[in-house]
Structures are given as C-alpha cells and as structure tokens.
Image 1 (cartoon, helix red, strand yellow):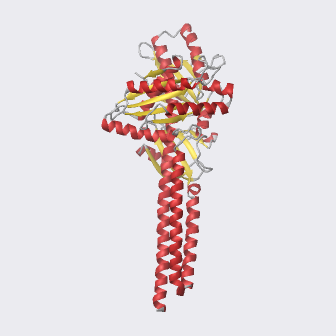
Image 2 (spheres, helix red, strand yellow):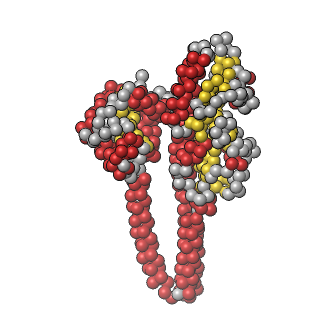
Image 3 (tube, rainbow, N blue to C red):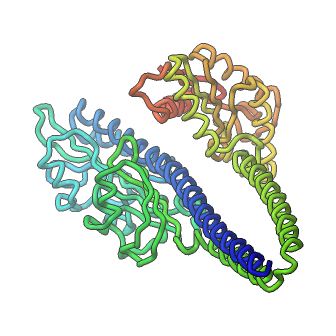
Length: 494
C-alpha cells in the first residue's frame, strides 16, 4: 500500500511537472504569435502613413515636372511657379522644401526664404543619378543634411527633360526627418522597441533617433537578407546598432522600394510570460512537495487541486472575457465612439477581398470637417471634441448596419460601403453632408457660418490586381477636389 501510494505520488508529481512545461511552451507560442500579430499590424499602419507621405511628395513633383516640360523655362515661368512651391511647403507639414535645379545643378526656383545666390547641388547623389539615368521615375534617396536649413531630410527627386529628351535639371522635394520622427513617436513600442524606415539597403530614419545611424547601411545583417527574400515577415535578431535582441516585423510599401520595421525588445516583450512561468513553476513544485510529504492525504490534496483548477478555469474565463472587452475597446475610437483606424483597415481588407471574390462594387467615402483647425482655435479643444462627436453621430445615423463609419485620423472620418456603386455612394455622401448641416453647429470662422463637411467618393468593382490602398487614395483625391471646390460638397473620383 505504501509502495503503491509512493508510486502514485511520483506519477502525479511527474505529470504535474510535464503539464507545467507543456503549458509554459504553449503560452510562449501564443505570446510569440500575439507579438508578431501586433508588430505586423503596427508595421502596416506605419507603412501606410509613410507611403501616403511619399505619394504626396511624388504627386507634387509630377505636377512641377509637367509644368516645366510643357513650358519654356524662362524667368516668367519660374516667377509664376515660386509661390506655388511656397504654398505646398506651408500646407504640408511633412515637406521641408521644394527645389528646381538646372542641368548644371544651379538653383532655379525654390521654396526657401533665402536667395539662391551661387548655390549648386550638382554634387548631390540624387543629382548625379538623374544626370546619368534617363528614367522618369521618382528617386527616394538616402538621408542628407539640407544645405538650406541644416536639418536632416529625405530627398525625393525626379529628372527634368528638355524637348529633345536630354537632361534639363532636377525637381527635388525634401521630407523632414523631424516630422517623420514625430509620426513614429505616436506609436507605443516600449522602452526597448524601435521603428525604422529603410530604403533599398540604407536606413532612412529610426526611432530612437541617433544622428550617427542616419544613412547606415546593413547589407550583411540577417534582417537585410530577409528583406531580399520576402516582402513582409517577422524575425528575431540582435540589432547591429545597439546590440538589443528584438522581435522584428517588417512590411514593404506597395508602390515604393521602402520597408518599415517595428521591433520590440525580446526581454521586455516576454517579461510577463517569464514571470508567469516562474510563478507557475514555483507553484507546481510546491504542490509536488506538498503531495509527496502529505502522501496519506493524497485524496484530499487531489480534491484541493481540482478546486484550484476550477478556480483557474474561472480565472481563465474571466480573463478571456476581459480580453474580449479589451479587444472591443481596441477597435473603438475613444473620442467619437466610431471604429478606429486599425479596425477600419482590417474591415477594408476583408470587404475588399469579398468584393474581389463576388465581383461586386465596393465604395469608400472620405469625410473631412471643414475649417476644423479654425474651429478649434476659436472655440477651444473641448468644443472641438464635442463637435467631432456630434458629426460622428450624424454620420453613423446615415448608414446601414452592414456599413462602417470609422475615424480615420484627426478630423477625418471614413465610410466603408460594401455592395455600393459610385451613384449609391454619392447618395450616402449627400445624406451625410446634409445630416451634418442639419446639426447647425455654429462656426463663425467658416464662410458658411456653421460646421460642414467635405466628402470624397470612390467606388469600383475590384480586379485581381487592384489594392485597397488605391481605392483609399482615389477617395482621398476626390476629397481634395471637393475641398478645392469650396468645401461643403461631395465629389466622386473619375
């Protein structure tokens, strides 16, 4: 009987230790999966932000190149172009400066409040590239220190051709590294985390920022090798910059040779799992000791263990319920109660895939509160928040249950309309616009005298080669046209 009890106790202790090890490994796998998922989602959000900034710069460059190539580069043309450049820089925070150089690298026209004098940029890497390369595509260069402002910038440039196709100069838009860093600072990545934007083989900007890292090349790093073999993924590696081992997720931009990496410190990310594993192991060891010492009370101890497991299950269920509530909160914008940007992105991907499969129309309506900055300046941020809440409520009342209204960022909101063509989306946009007008929120700084919205509509039956970002970009361009036409209006993208 004693021998049998001893064997039984040994069997129970061994089973507990094995089960503990299995639970720890399973929890680690789940933790790794959760970290990778969170990093990937964050990398996609950052990559979309970076892509929109670069796309805006390229759009401006294309317009300037078109204007210069269709007209003679004479003083009258340059004089007419200069206030346009200044206006672009003043309106777009991400852009530090806009410059036009002739074939010798001399400054023709620029957005800076300084005289060009004898300044020359023919030695810059981007200028040498365009002078020797006939490609008409925009080039995203490595970070450089601006000669006009003394600040770090990322150059985006394009070649100008004369009527015979020969090299006639370069149009340059410089993106402010300081502004890019401010965008990266918005994301929570922990004390040991980092977010970086890479070019083909060169670091463009990284948080945390160190000036010595600017333009760093990592051609032999494990991360760079993964860049060459995959457009996205997750890897665990030790940083060549600061020596910290991190879990790194990377995402390639759709339309540009750039990659975004989001990394969290391995120790920091797994700290809770380690502590939980240690406490759980200590508990199991103590339980085994208690069982071995109290062999004659084995049955009672087993009953206690069953009660403890019941409590653990209850705690697990409570934790699962709490996690579900947290997940719901994570999908909701805290100010307006609408879906947040992260949830909208996931719904857009799903709706886009369904529309591709069923070959049905999908529409997006971008909404922007007109003159909202002036509203904030005039009435204060508390009233501004209340204004956004009321506008959000009005927009939500105009859509069906199957349609989604989300806060896209700042005073921008977005409507996702499955199975809706351009005509139907325009009707929804008009209802939304009138619903905001019906609120009759006073706005003394607006020409209308009350709060209004501008709306950009884009709809398509997605093809296999189209992407959600293209549809978003089309809606955003339509919104831009609506605001250009005087605001308080809806515009459908062609």
